[in-house]
Amino acid sequence: MTFVESINSPPERTTLRDLFRDTGRFIFAVEIETTRGLAMEEPASRMARLANDLADFPDVDVLGLTDNPGGNPSNRPEALGLQLHERGQEVIVNVSCKDYNRNGIESRLWALGSYGFDALLALTGDYPTAGYAGQAKPVFDIDSVGLLEIIRRLNEGYPPPDRSVGARMPTMRTSFFPGATVSPFKVQESEYLPQLFKLEYKIRTGAQWAITQIGYDSRKLDELQRYMALKQMNIPLIGSVYLLSAPAARFFHRWGIPGINASAELVELANKQASSEDHGTAFFHEFAAKQIAILKGLGYRGVYLSGRPSLSRIETIINIEKSFGEDDWKDFARELQYPLPEEFYYFEQDPDTGLASSQINREYLASKSGFARTRKRLIQSPAFTIGKLTHDVFFDAKAPGRKLGELVYKGLEKSPRPVQRIAHFAEQASKVPVYGCQDCGDCSLPDIAYLCPESQCAKNQRNGPCGGTKDVQCEVLDKDCIWSRAYDRLKAIGQEEHMLDRPVIFKNGALQGTSAWGNTFRERDHHSANSEGQKSR
Ligand code: SF4
Image (tube, rainbow, N blue to C red; front, side, top):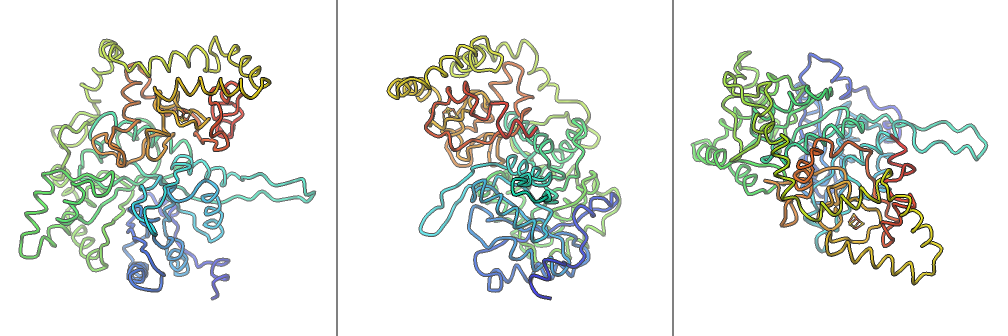
């Protein structure tokens, strides 16, 4: 079969969508890390060989193909994915936003759809760490939520057919089956709950399934499922299991991979096991098997195994897991809990199971009381107070001063250039010192509790936090995540739970260097009811 023939008539395969339809089935997915170099040469071919071996291995259902993992350049997942499709193997293609702007991403999505890929994992992506002759400049034009929105629109038929050519143009639709990631393994309330809000946001935007971040706390895994049920987030959930080793545990503990944490207790255990005769191999196999058993017991729909496991190790883990008794997972779930110090939980612990109960954390509930919020309001940041007041008086669509602002900026547009420049200078003079404004012209201050994503977020995240924080600290900058800070600011006024209840935000690059105030009053920015993001809802 030629390459073109194989794309046009790919062999039958059981898709991820099909696998989820079989509700009694526990899906086994393995991550294949793409590498630098040609797909047919070492070391990429090692991964290709493993992928091909796994395609013949009946216990593995799906292979996940990474997209420039760890911020490093590598061969595109499609190169290997096409070979696997030819063999009838279902793959999940990771698509991240770090290396392409929205046009590059849309172009890639058209190519992925043309090649017949449908299961896509939408990611914001790791901050680039390497590149030819120096570190690559990150893009982050859009984020995972923006990516899901574009995928949803392509599935609905976007762009609409061009009828102007006279012919009856058919509407082109992709048929992607997009998934999202969620990170429940966060320490503080202000970094954990926004992750859960963001999952809801992703589901509203089109995510049809989700995969957890790697973590080592069964209680958090249970809690995530309970939270999703409580908020009626009815999508299948897959749990990540990383084949641990002592070096990997130490690496995670040092925050070697943003967003993945290993507690000191887990590192100590891993080090102790590594000093045994087999260097802990048997222990780590059993550890992974127990994690899989826990996911099954908790009702997860599958596992996503990573950590570059060989075929023989995967076989060993599966066989160990099969040897467990039906209820063994309950003991494992109690045993495999390695939270970080002071870790926040949304639900109280069930003393019988060691997992989550149905009672929401009482201390958390008390912190939302009127008295607690009033105390927080008293120490609220002046930047927030001034920003919100100004917004509520002038910029909000229903603000009393809105009409005045619209009139002023309508008049300014007809004024001579020097007058416009003076007005823009006055705007900048007030925003640069207070917010670190970068003059993007499409202001998101009201979206992020008056914190500027351009100057204070390394990934310019306008639709919620990425998953890379550790104890609220940004994975790139030496400062707290703006989304955790926004959560705290909004909690003081009782609006934190709605921080992401809104249409997806796409920054309009054409507005860079223009007056953000003028763009709001003249309805040119993303706040306008006529913007693409607002219209698509
Ligand atoms: S206009 Fe853009 S750069 Fe300036 S404060 Fe607002 S979001 Fe930040």
